[in-house]
Length: 161
DNA sequence: GCCAACGTTGGC
DNA sequence: GCCAACGTTGGC
Image (tube, rainbow, N blue to C red; front, top):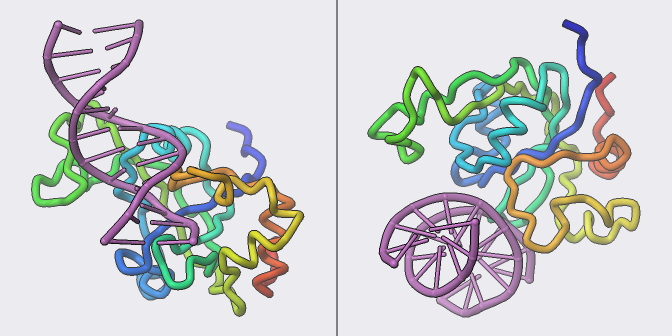
């Protein structure tokens, strides 16, 4: 199968739940716990190995893009849906027909200069970014290549080749 | 802590 | 299949 062109994404995470530092310590993680169908469809169907990710801290002080990551494995079933003890347990999911999926990502770099929401909003070139739109709750979002590069520039991180 | 925006559920 | 009620997200 032909390798799809690289795409760019933004993943939201609450730093109290799974912050970028924790992610860096782990070295890799399956992006689990997403329980929204639109985000699920992106994870399962659109996000592929080699794609790049802006790591966004939501519900945070400050709310900011704090790092970048690379997709290291295409999606497979999110195990937490099968675990009755997990907060992400889904009693309607079965192993024969899993409902929820997650890709694996690895950290590339923490932003030397995290780009907080005010900075994002203050940059005219980012005005169309989904995360800045009113009511944009989607926890996994597509990002334009130009927006990705701009955020890297603002965060003083080298755009990965 | 408030509340607007959005997604899901379930009665009908 | 509609839509009101409810739950969640997440900025502020």
